[in-house]
Image (cartoon, rainbow, N blue to C red):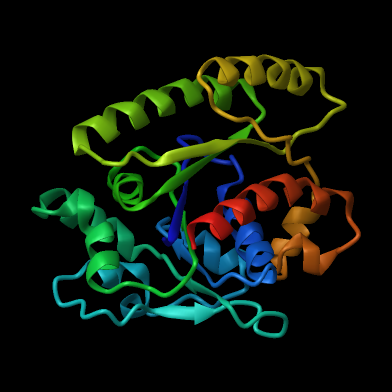
Length: 264
């Protein structure tokens, strides 16, 4: 079975796109076919992957049009290094799409419908969602099989995580999703061990998630090199392969590799 992974957060700056692009690269390196879908009107995936801004009919917005016939607008990523990872770009045209989805009779289920009617052959599809709890994360939730929740290690972000979980549980029941998407875990991002507030938040977060039977991965550390790498349109592993932060993704990749081998 294909694994469809949504990266959800209701706070900006949580590192969703950084995580999405790095997971796409690393799991493609493991030999899996990966599609990265940008559901963010800001088109962050294009920026982080060094892609030119697409034409409006060559974005994921085209997938939601009534005349869509299965021609997924996918573009290859990092062709010099990989042949098995592609992206479906987002852009500001998704703002109009949001209004159309609200009125569409199958709006909340439309992305899942498209994947049923016009299936992709990829082993893994990653949905990079905007930092809202609106229509676009809603369609990702109804289409996905699994969830990962990136979390910036800051008080505002951690306070919002409880609201996100409430939204998830309520929305899954309202949409009658069966089976409900499985939460693989929370990923604390931009963690600086030198900061007491980061250490304290992490120390409180882990037992709170354990009570909910939700896994918390080891944090991904803060480094300005992530911005430098994204400025060149590549993951950190290509920009500075020996950087210590590269190893921070290993537990997540191992978990997803295990899941993919079991499901595919």
